[in-house]
Structures are given as C-alpha cells and as structure tokens.
Length: 394
Image: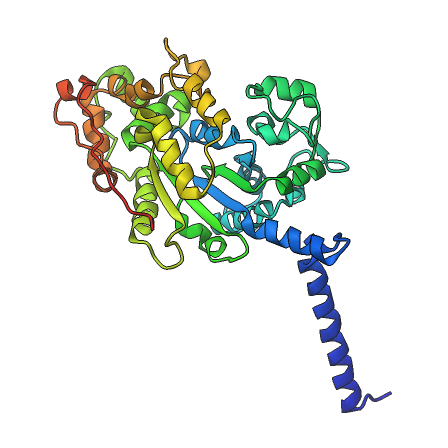
C-alpha cells in the first residue's frame, strides 16, 4: 500500500505533537502534583529562590571543614562528595576523563534539582526500592540524618556524629532524601572531583540552577605535606626524600597537578568571564583558619544565606581544639584551625619546600603565598606566608 504525501505529513505532525507532549510532561513533573493554580505558583516561586552552591576544592585543602560550615545551617541541604560514586563506578570501566566529567555534570544538574535517585545508577551495590547503606559518608550530612529522612534525631540537634547517624538511622531512603532537599532553600555540595571551574560552565549558564561556585584553595606546599601523610603511596619520591634527608636523583621538576589545576581554575575565575561573573568566589583556607567567624560571615553574606546560630556555635567548638593532631584524625574537623593551617612548615625540610615552590611558583604568586627564603624563615611561625588579598567578586 502506498502512502500519499499528505498522509506522510500528517504522520510527521502527529509524531512532533507526541514528542512535544512528552517533553512538556517531563519538564513540568515538579509541578504535576499541584492541587490548584496558587500552589503551583508557590512551588515555582520557591524553586526560583533556591540557592545552589558548589564548593570546588582539592583533597587535603580543608574542604571537609569548610563544607561543615554549611552543613550546620538548618536551611541547607548539604551533600559530601556525591561525585565519588560516579568516579568510582566509571573509573573501573572507562579511562576517558571527559566521559567521567560529562557524567559528573549530568549528576550535579540532577542533584541540584533534588533528584537523588540519579545516584542509584552509580551506587554499588545497586539500591533496592530506593534504599541503600552505601552512600559515601552519609553521616557527614545532617539533612540525611534528621527528619524527614530519619526520625532518630531532631532537626534542632547540633551535634550528631557520623557513627550515631549510621547506627540509629539505618538504610538511607533516597526518596525521602529528595524530599528533604526540596524542603530547604539552600542546596550545597562539596567536591574534589571537578579539577577546574570551566568544566561546569554549562551548569553555570543554566538559568534554572541559579548556581554559584566557591573555590577553596590552600597553599600547595601545605596540601602536598598533608597528602604525603594521608596518601603515602601516591608520593613515594617525596616520602623517600623525607626519610633519607636528601633529594632523590631521579626526581625532576615535573608538574604537580594540584598547582596546574589551581592556576587554571583561579585564573579563569579572577578574569570574570561573562558566564562566571557574579557567580564565583575564591576562598583561601588560611584566611578561613585565621579568622573563621569573620570569614564565614563574609562568605554567607555573599551567598545571601543568613548566619544561623548553629553555625556560630559549631565554629567556636571546632576551631579552638588543642593538643596533638593524630594521623588517625585526618578527616576530622575539630582542631586548632590556625595552627593546623601552618603545621606543614614544621613537617617539610627547607629543600623540599624550595622544590615545591619552584614547581608551583606561578600559582603561589597568583594566590598570594610568599616564597620561603631560608630554613629559619620556614620554621618561624610568627612570620606569615600569606599576603593580604583583596578581591572583588561583583
């Protein structure tokens, strides 16, 4: 049977109509449960008021401490390293960095709209009926340990340990977690798995997300010193240097990834391209450690978030801890923050510091970190290596 050209056009129009209806049904899903027009408007208005904040950091840069500042706020839905699941799942099957970063962008876009079910494709073992006990450090998020997700603790409780959360709350219901996310006006995520800010340009240009980026940096010399202790297998040559007291002969002046990534990302951020203008703030860990309350006030004001008393109380309790910091506490946030930010100066030899600041010279200058000139200068903690840095983020 032969179809006339009119029939073909008609079929094409029907196909387009069906596709349009499908797209409309998907994009309006968030409002499909509204019982009346006013309620739909209220939901849309709340969505438009949400603050979406992504903390970009590097491992051992103080990001766990920094993320907890937001986690203490009762109107913040905070997620700790959600991209860990994506990277873990895809690293075993794909060596293409761009594929992993692309999947990470898609997951972030969904999570910022409170669709936590998207994580199910990457969590191992795969959740059953949206229930899982495999979310990385679930207890680092108070929103995942309090109502409506878990009734074991009150939302007003200030101190809930990760161990208590895991013991009392049981399996995580990702559907209830999505509801908890929807109920809060601020969605904050922290990741060390996005190397440079340009990777998430698509998200920053998405008007639906109202996304802002906080780039947390730390003196690379301090980062390397901390990583050598926490991840010794990744720094064998530097560890050998520290143990033997002399530089290994085959250690050349190779690039250090954290220095390269910081330089690229911060250079982009400070140049304020149109797609990033008004959406980027640079925070040095040392500034935060020296004046935690003042710096937190500045950050929250920039983001348009009120400084809740729970945040103030947490800062006072977790930045004045005294005593020796044990290697067993590498992920702890409770310590003398000012002393910890400078502790690397007593752990690295002057020769090691000279090597690092030669390799990372450009980014040290960009971020306002002074070069050490002698061993005496290195260990004199009364001499600050952090220059004043005034930056406008408007």
